[in-house]
Length: 404
Ligand code: F0G
Figure 1 (cartoon, rainbow, N blue to C red):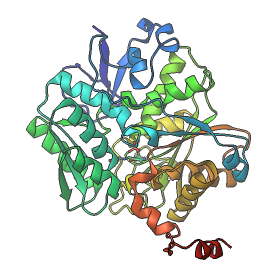
Figure 2: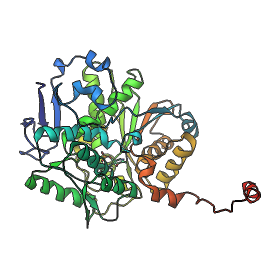
Figure 3: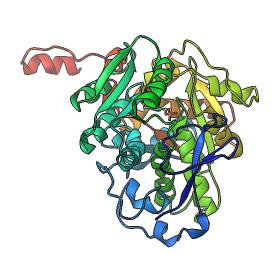
Figure 4: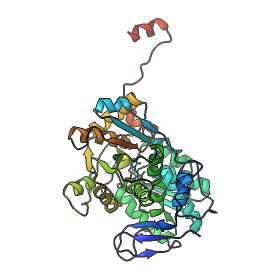
């Protein structure tokens, strides 16, 4: 049996692996999963066979015998982006496109672990609040596992492709009159009272899956940790998870550093950026977050404490970008590198550009940007920002004239 601890980051209280607990029952702090790193054989990580999240099973909270609920998540490409680097004026840029996970976002990494844990616990169903991608991913894993899935979505605020996925894969969807933060508040209470397993990123098991982004980056760069990793921030789970992944590699002596964790929020939803810049320990929630990047339209990020620690401890920064900057970056990434992402994902590139201009990022840094979701998630935004197709008769002469 693999031993690990579920530990409060604030007061150190511990919970067992049988407990269904998301935050500390004593002080309300966030929870972390901790292993006995002296017991872990490094070779079983660096020489592991296979692909994707479960390749790193040694650093996941399951026994060898556990059968995962999986749809081959992870193993996403890390593209070297020389054209974009040149236009930004930097030397060494890589983009890891998490939009190429099976459901089209990084959430699959967390859900394969989270739903596998749900099956181990024997819960009667799974639930989430979502700006879209979490519900799309969870609905797929729940379908695969054969358990009910309930999703609370802020009414009128979720991109079309994501709702379509949750609907098709059979989630019971509620269109909630309120924003994402309201939905999360409600679903947390519902899960506590109805024996449903909560699979938002406050659940520490989800972050165990998402930390494998760090393992894949280090592996693809031959254990060469980038100087900086830039990631869009919403509920702040992913930046915390990736930091944990890099920290574990360093603890195990596989790598010798952790990248400067750099979190980017939208200008209309930036409580973490505010706390970082004002040197505050806690965020002040924003009541009416607003941005075209609907995935990160979040005013009260549940993982703020972990994210602020990750950014500060690694020597990174938090910065915000406007909707215009996000749109420009989305188009550049698509047209210079062939990488199609949804608006929230482009925040990482927009943030990179801004931080280079501000002189916060050195031009010779090795940088990895994470693009979190696929372009097709939000087709409505594409129609808003791109030139519409031209209607034309089936006549080659007309076409020829139009090409000129
Ligand atoms: N990018 C995309 C495409 C997302 O869907 C999300 C979060 C983030 C970035 C931010 O990640 O929350 O870990 O900081 N989407 C959640 C959802 C909130 O419900 O799909 P985070």
